[in-house]
Length: 219
Ligand code: PRP
Image (cartoon, rainbow, N blue to C red; front, side, top):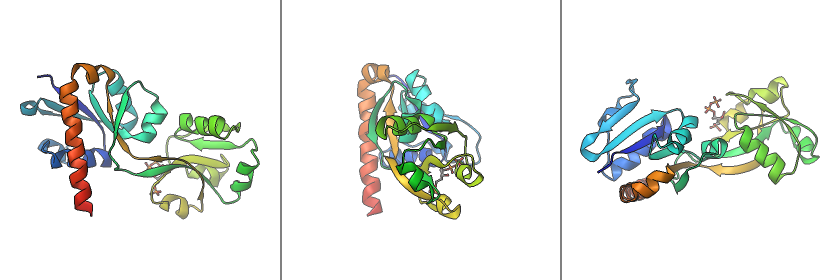
């Protein structure tokens, strides 16, 4: 039997994904230690291996086959444009990619003026403005706290993730347009899907079982 390697986007998503697998009988006790700085966890009895990676690197590990399976947000999948199969929506980490800014920016957006758009997601933002809205904009790549940009005058609007809306609200900003809904997805390496198909299908079935059990518990 081959070993199946999982790449999980570290943080809340990894914890939720492991919780989901645990419902279906796959667990990795070692990973639960929040104080540990360990990045890779082995479960030789079940031929499984898990590692935690920065979210934006998960599609890279999966494309190159360093991981057979990945769990990562749809935002990262869209932004990274890697060759992989997206096979399942886990329905966790639900949020939205939005165009946001001060209420006053609504007009410049509607008038298709040449505006500046700050974002951590230039690929998604470019696709939305150029291919969906057919609007030319100037994109500015930032690496975090994107909400600052319209406040300090770097850009008119931002393209960013909105979950509860608290960050926008507390900074006097609002959602102006919705780009797309987001959630955590399971991705699979294209070669692994062929060469390790039976094992991968078995794991996907376990994710489905975990998903059903989790939903039942939430009722
Ligand atoms: C994300 C996102 C928003 C915030 C949205 O930031 O970029 O800033 O969460 O959540 P809310 O709608 O519930 O307030 P993250 O915490 O990932 O950090 P970042 O600022 O470095 O992007």
